[in-house]
Length: 176
Image 1 (tube, helix red, strand yellow):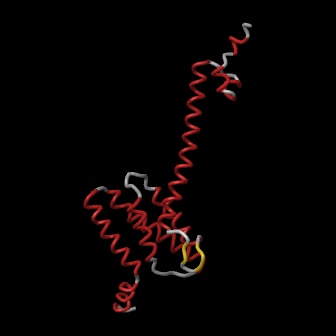
Image 2 (image 1 turned 180 degrees about the horizontal axis):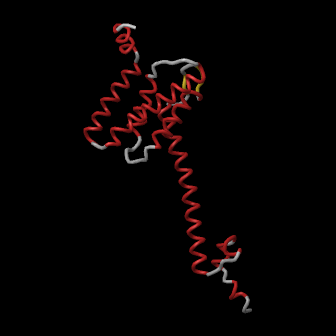
Image 3 (image 1 turned 90 degrees about the vertical axis):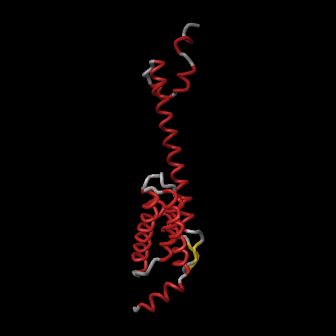
């Protein structure tokens, strides 16, 4: 490939135009935010998206190509996710976006969902579901420990029927 062919490819690929615009937005955001995560998140999202996209395509079709759509998706993910979140969220979001791009489609290059939007929404729903259940379990375990502390009941009734053991004092009911 000569330089003229490469420049023609760059000029005619609209996804690279969008990627260039998103890079400009990223530079403006860096000028305003000035944190390390604001710099790293788009780079990590691009790297994860390119790795996931190329590996999935290689496993499925045995092809290597220039992933311009992965650049756009990675930049969108890196710019939308809050820089104060943990870094693992970028990897999970990129994986979910790549899987939606590769497997949720109607035909060749006909995605049903925007991969970046799908990855962010799926990660948010999964994280809320998991954190909600962990918070529920954590709160219940604290409540059970408090009920043991206040009632001094270490029998199976207080453990299995904590609500009943807490509201009904079994020692007072025997005085009838």
